[in-house]
Length: 535
Image 1 (tube, rainbow, N blue to C red):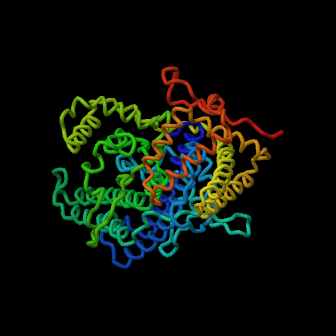
Image 2: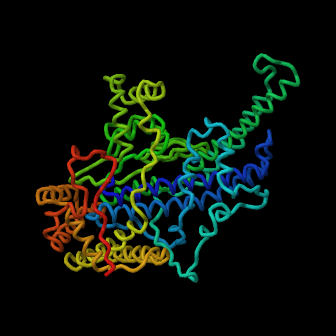
Image 3: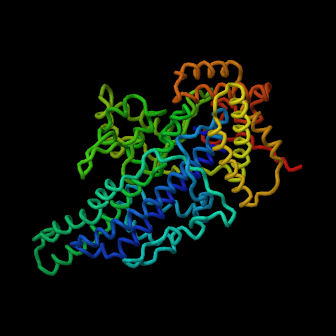
């Protein structure tokens, strides 16, 4: 959970950007669906289906890559700004990709958020029309004219090359690459084939609402088929959003590599399933993973192959995110949405006594949707942004400097070759400095900002909590490469304390350290912002 305004701001921006990415994809897919005439076809020729699937797969690869890049940008920035005692690890071999990630998705980010595609979009009147009308980019696409991402997102989303002064971003590998066969099968039966089957069922009706008058019957059938066409597009799009969302798997893998946990931070209008899992807290304890639903572990795809699901269970159209949390944090706090979910879970416990997990989930779903518990707590989950990108960069850049300084010291002292890690941190530093300069955020004294960041990191740990954390890391270390983080983290903490031995005495200069009972609104952070160092 975010300890600070910076971490909360980074997280909220990530929520909004991923939701806007889903919106952009919905716009393009809608245009492609209509442009190929799929909404007007009761039977879709095999050639048209193949052409549609080929076009969609090309689009989804682009969006999958964007989702992965967004997740890395979020995880790196969140870790550096909010978990400054954690050494930044390289998760697998890096690769060089486009660096247009730092652009704003849209100036009107707030209004676009209000018409975001969700798993329940089909329940909203004219939802698909609203999605299309939410942007001027809802143009009719020709059958042979594959829509370009830049046409929807703006030219700044086109790939930027080095000639324009933008160096590529070093991106970690995808822990769950997109399976083209699985994507094709799901889209086929959520989209054209599913629609074709429903349309045939409607066509076969001889009476509708008790009326068998030929004219009225045909008119009613046509209306139903048109509605079914919209539902099929929505189902296909929701499935596509789920399949190209590389962010959940990346955050899950990155937290494991850094010895962190995660919680399920809810998106807007969450379903009962997501609320129930969020209420379990850090890493969804209490058996939720093993017993809730086997299809989220492994399942047989329509082509016969066995597919593997991630730990971060999602459903089509899910807007929830994973948020990193330190397992050795001296002052752990869960996200606002998780705390609210836990209150609802507690309210419903009277319905769930002595039940196994699947039965508890069913009872909670009934209480949640049946009005037996107050779910209004979760209706407005749009959080305040709390901090600006400039604020966050002023923490991220000197934090990377601190990471590099420590890892060079660690390598010299222990003889451990961490040059790959150092090189990755240097590439990230170059990328974030590029972002600072591109935004023209002005001059600052990076040396003094660096000193302040080191003090802020050291201020987290009073002596007793410091010793407890070191002991916990020692227990995690089994001597393997997997637990390298458990050797680096204590060294990092000791190095920070050596640099700023007295910072722990004045944590109020860097963090909100008020006891919970003194906080009027625990959902509002008031930790001190970094002073300006422009002299």
